[in-house]
Length: 165
Image 1: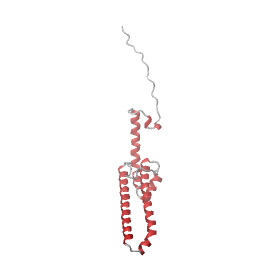
Image 2 (image 1 turned 180 degrees about the vertical axis):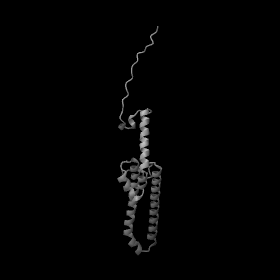
Image 3 (image 1 turned 135 degrees about the horizontal axis):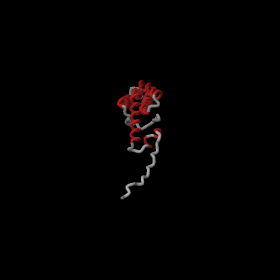
Image 4 (image 1 turned 60 degrees about the vertical axis):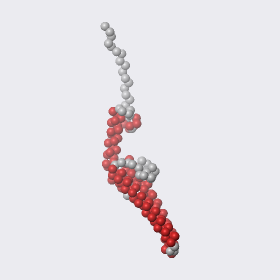
């Protein structure tokens, strides 16, 4: 009679990893990795729902300080605060340049009525108006991204970081 018994070698016990090590430490495709990814997704969705108003405030000029102070633990709010702060710094820079140029050249322009200087002022005013319109469109795009709950970068300025995200 043949011997049907097998020598069974037990498999080593899997090493249990703590949840603080992150999703990169879990084996892709395992149930632990799926559970950890689902937990992170739920935390991210909760973060977005709680901090959506803060993210919208980030694109409203000086109100960018509100999410920087009151939602500094939220990655979603910090991302939008960074985008809003970049936009606000650019807006403040343009406002400062306009103020200085207006202060320096406005008395001179009022004393002279040369057509060249008048045309130059109108051209400069048009260019500044276009830049302000671009800033307004970028702010609107950022607000729409914040309302939608996505963290897409703003065109042109989105690749720069001021706030650690």
